[in-house]
Image (cartoon, rainbow, N blue to C red):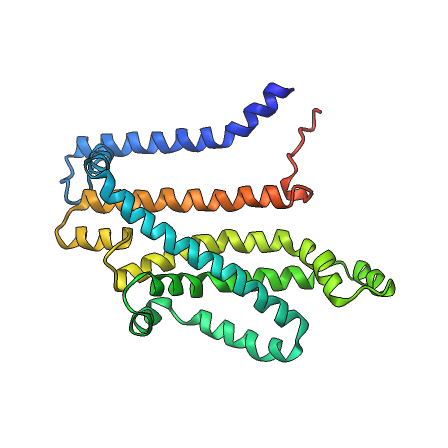
Length: 264
């Protein structure tokens, strides 16, 4: 039984790794058999060679993108959660702030990126701001939904026991909203990375987005693919970091319980 459960822990990552390895092998073989020019589509071996040719260069730029992404994400979680609580407890904010957030989210952030550069300069601050504006909406939507779907009977019972609204918020509403909040956080961390890259595309001297732009200007396709591969790896690591945080924070929720086989 223990062997089977320990195998299931590694079953998913091993399956993903095997699928990825198979895809890379097929990619390598097709590029070499069809003799595709390297400036159009380099084989994975060339991309790996490019990564190991300048590890410090890629590490520093990956660190910059990681920093702006995490900063924008954490800011979106804090501000988004506070805004959600305000919207749930205030009819006025629900009727005024919520429609404004929806309208603001409909505006392409690429169009807003040059304004952030003008207002905040060309350092890390505008990238963090863009990541925040893209990531905050999913936090607000998921948190508002979670707070509103708390058990009304439990809330009524707490009020009958003379619990304050602050106690109801901390003891009932927020714990019951956590599964929904973490769902929004998984989306938020992914789009925060997109926002950071958008900021680097518009104006930046560091980051993986800037690596892609510089490589494009000189047709260094292998370097572009190396940066894209690092972005994919970075996004995957960040997503699963949020998922691990979810398992630690709400182990009691049904979504975190291991499914049992019908034979057991």
